[in-house]
Image (cartoon, rainbow, N blue to C red; front, side, top):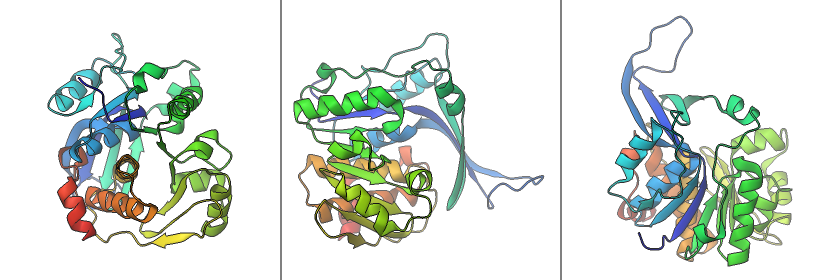
Length: 298
């Protein structure tokens, strides 16, 4: 495989998803499963699928893969421009999986991440400079501590702009990012009780790049250090499943950076990608195409 345009580092999972027929799970009540799938997931896995659909070649690294996850990934990406050569294989482990129950606007992910992270052992790649050689943009998940920071440092050394997600204002990942997309999860963890404008001011003041605060169906706020806070309303669509919405937004931002979009264009493009994603299930089998995104923007 030739040089990939984009390097992705972070969570690559096997996701078991269950779309329910009538509303969300209720205690002691039966629920009918409408659709179920086992497909690539995780913030990085989903972004790779979306970027490939937008016509971008991708190389991904991060979570080690095992006996159940590896064959599914290899099979899924066989006909796509997604390079899996950096992924390390574990022979005696099924690999990292999550289970997601979905009903329209609500979803509940389940997994063993607290257990995995609390072992103190590493179950992901260490980024190397040669992994990123020739790439024009990157996206880095913040979950892998020192290794996530190392990926960002390599990007800085090589002059590769990177997108990250949910990194608070005091994080080096945020400071040096071309784009940091901050969601409700990050707000509830670090900025409980603060109003969105105050959160944005803190983030923008510490950023070299663009900060975007997403608020589900509410207005997105975005801006840069020394500038005004801008607002944009998300596209309205009928929601089928919110699984992968944020990861698709991240992929849209990465595409925008790769193609030198202005801040307004980038936010609108990422928002359109995300809107298409939530109108479908399962996302990996129906990712947004470039033509569809352009159509929605028009």
